[in-house]
Image (cartoon, rainbow, N blue to C red; front, side, top):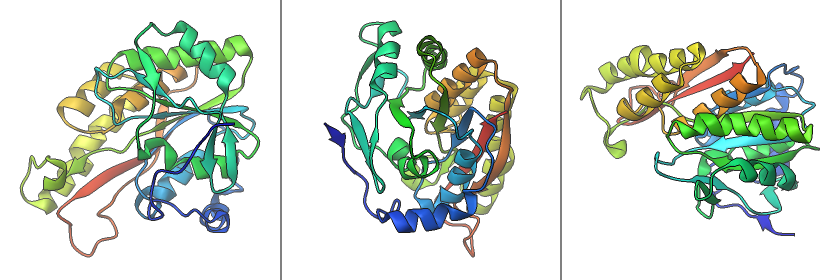
Amino acid sequence: MQVREYSLAEGWYPKDPNKVAGFLSGFSKQEGQARAAIAPHAGWAYSGRLAALALCNLERDAETLAVLGGHLPGESPALFAMEDALRTPFGAMPVDKELRSAIMEVLAEGSYGEDRFRDNTIEVLLPMLHFFFPNAKVLWLRLGADASSFAAGQTIEAAAKKLKRKINVLASADLTHWGKNFGFTPLENSEKALQWVKDVNDKNFIRAVERGEPSAVLKLGEANKASCSSGAVLGAMGFAQAAGLPKARLLEYATSADSAKQVPDTFVGYAAMVFG
């Protein structure tokens, strides 16, 4: 069996299963009712609580968890993890190879490939998924910032329906990255920038998701840099529409600057959202 091993350093999330369980223990009694969600993917010290909040709101009877990552430009093909299982602190989480094949059969030739890259958007969420869904399989798929990612989400729903597979879909996406380190400083003053990010840029992106407007999500994510992974969000929206799920709603919003004594030179926005 080929297992995709860790690629992220210890600082992203704990590799000790007891530490993972300790971090998530306060969320374990949550009764989830959603079939799709959006969660941030920074280190757990920054956005782990919001990610756990999104995940624990998913229904626990899923047979497969389709995790949609990002960090891909629009011209990129969709990228699948082609291994048999994915490593987490709780062991090897099996990949739903049957669902993966069913999706590939529908996608156009050349529109997908193998994900051989180091990336945090999916890996950082896997320990949480394995904790909340110990008996489920997983699908690793990263989607580019392109309108085709919405259609990819619809394809996931159709493939799952064909296989009679009960699945949850989780989109992994952070919001605005502000600061010179990120090459994005539309406002030089960090305090004013933080308010603009919260009250304008991130809020507009979240509202576009809530309204179910994929074109606006893509435009805001790219032109306004309101998300590093708008393709993942589009995939979840496409799945939700095809599955007839209610529109998305915001559970909680935060930024990496919230716990700082003064506004830092760089910060990132995070949102936990569910469809339903």
